[in-house]
Image (cartoon, rainbow, N blue to C red; front, side):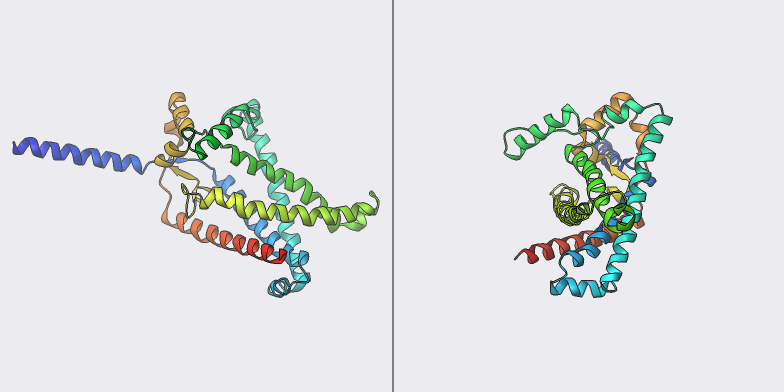
Length: 292
């Protein structure tokens, strides 16, 4: 009886050990280059936002104080242009890298269609419908694949912002050059578009994007995957079961396995991400305050 009990306890302990090991299994989600690009995009966006707000709300006392902290309005303008330049370089590099990897790997079609594509597809419409049904308690939670519909929306919002905000910003940055090509009234439109679209981008990124990435219950208080590049098996199954099952069917799950993120990587994510989150909330509060 004692031996049987001991064997049962050992089996239970062994099962718990196996479950613990399984719970600690991680899979690679983002490459180092993708993480670096996102970090640069995040830092330059925050830099453009904080340096641009004093120029938009120059008559406000808080804007003048913020401008002084940035070295005056000229200093804020310099920071704005440096961040904008780095952001443009990162954006162009990302587009070139995406096409290069697709062409070199012979997977050009996969860039436009399939579960690894960031291009919106019919399944995204189904996911939106099912997710809204789940919101109101009329259906089960949908199971997503590698990219959710809101991640794709965030992704393509960057393209919209780069062409609209970036394009109008270049006109304002190099007025002498572009005045040889465009009529004068275009610069008035560029100034209006640049400011209004920038406020829209700041409002979206620091509310919707931050909520989906950090504040929603499944991720609160912060999702560090973007900094570590790894996702736990538990997260992969609970949030992206369709991807997990697809990788199992294709026999590709093992090749995605990666070591657990280091404590330093997690702390880096907490510090950098937490700082960006805090500055973003401050920017939203200042914008709302200025409306009244």
